[in-house]
Length: 67
Image (cartoon, rainbow, N blue to C red; front, side):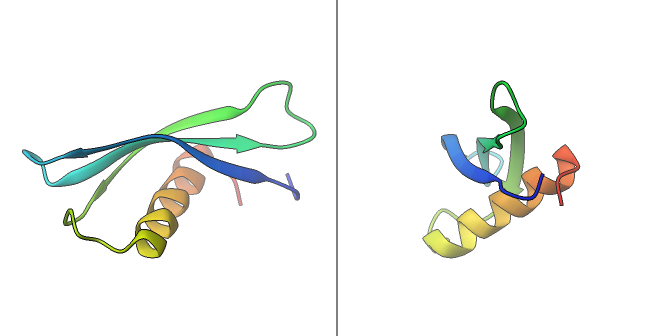
């Protein structure tokens, strides 16, 4: 998977656990449907957007085996 597009499909902040919960979708020309990877990232609710997206994408790639 060299050409991969990424979309964060769902994003929720769980205040009780102090973590973001998301579903990250990966789109690639070889996939018949997007690959959906659920992730959890511990973070403060005021985390910057760029840092949050990077953390969610990194964790989804790690869990989904995409590099």
